[in-house]
Length: 439
Image (cartoon, rainbow, N blue to C red; front, side, top):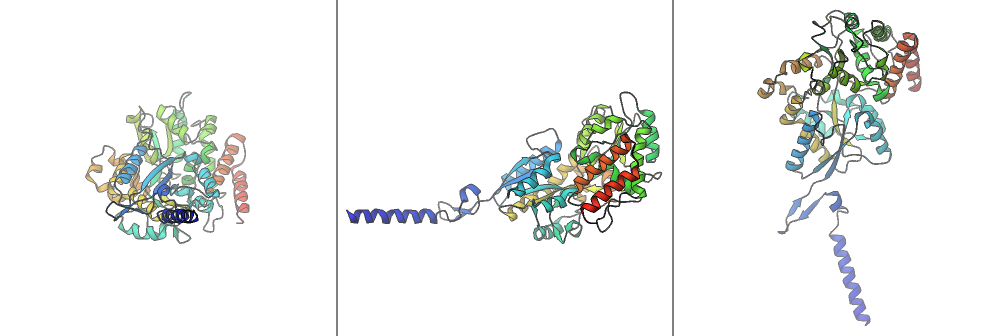
């Protein structure tokens, strides 16, 4: 009897060791990494299950960019040689940073993360993203006509993300209302005021502090540059309370004084302005080129034209503000090499052509030489955007930029609708920011 018990214990031990040896990769089945043995005994590659966090939704066809994303992901999942599988998790752009940083604080996050270049430093500070310099420096030289150099993308000598698009901000207007593009911002204020009616505002800048004050900042930044100023000096100190900043903010106030726009702008953000422009209740506005697909869906499309954003000097546009959506490797990526393998799929010629068809400026300039692209009905407009954008450069704003944006749009609200002084309000915002950052 004792011998039988001993035999049973030996067998249990043998099977236990065999089971442990068969799972030497830990959670290989659930994480889908490592390899398996085929029936012939040879190793069969098994890739990684990867998550991508992005503001686009591949399950929706409402935005042409969603369709492009779905095609890229589907093609990658079907054809990638690493046998990886990518799953997309969509997060609205207005909540993206908050959710990503909250997840990182809990020690979780995606394998691949989409980051707007304006917000990259916020992601770095929030621990949502990791450097990918070694992958990027090897990959960038293979991209013919890439808009960005490796050095231009470095922060503290590291590359954290690769922009897959290049956008700029332009003036959109109705050519049945504005027979010619005004030559300057002052001319726009007067003409837009004259064209405003009870049912339609002539030119509108959103003054809502929702969505990080994006509508206001997308105009205020190029305006202050047109006046010869900037938001920050080389040390990172806020200097927007200069004469140039006052000129830019006073101009926004002049739009209300001239009746180009009214108090309803307090509740308007980017999305609301685009919807109103499409519906014809706003006659002109500033908006990013990435909004083109939405704008062109308007029934008024044949009356809608774009031009470089106007400046303070006659026939001199505001300096182009350039930004872009980019992809990086999540801080907690299980397999950084696999994550970067997917990132490369956004930069194939086919993908870049598809982005351009969706009216998104591609990151590869060589796409404009493609015959299929040249045959597009709006090719001249796309080319004009690229030419305007080429005169600007990408800028990485500080980690607390979104917080500052809200402060600035609130300063604008105080000036325009509260009767406050522009210089005083900008001084208050600058002093707050510089004190907060020990500048």
